[in-house]
Image 1 (tube, rainbow, N blue to C red):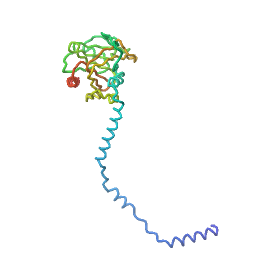
Image 2 (image 1 turned 180 degrees about the vertical axis):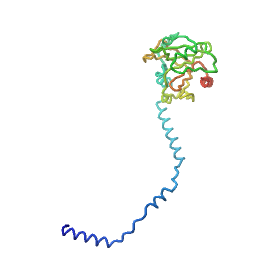
Image 3 (image 1 turned 30 degrees about the vertical axis):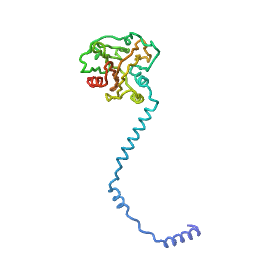
Image 4 (image 1 turned 120 degrees about the horizontal axis):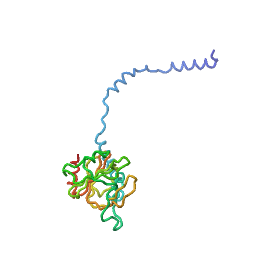
Length: 243
């Protein structure tokens, strides 16, 4: 049984409730249906695109701001993974007069190169048949890391590396020209020292040489290096004919 004081409290609350006019509960189902039937407001596309452009500009400025970083330094960093290191400068006489071949370099025909390599071997159609095909830096299984096709009596060289580029480095190379070939590409118009990096990560300075204008690009897990063509237009035409 409730205590006497609780009986009094209950009675007072009931009398208080009778003194207030409480409206009947509304059927919320109709209101919910009307709200769901409304067309969703369209977002302002112009504001979206403007935000995207601003974001792209911010990224570009952030990438290019480090005081016009030297192209050779930047591209050299990204090429180490593919087996080549480029350097902006070095002490006079640092490069050998006659560079040594790449590690364990051997001459084969194109069919043999395709058979032995573990990555797809391609060739530029516009250059025709290569004068020489070279394999270099084989792994324990004998598969070469580098396949080089030599054209025009040795003045044009098309190297294929079992290794990839890192595109972000290219954005810090303001002196290079970005080219839309493959996954990422860069054109180096000036001569530059080149040193080969072996599978063990050690620079082979005895293979260093001064290279001419070069187009470098990557497709999938393979990096390509086309050297010896004087203009970007010609190099791009050759690169786009690679099959």
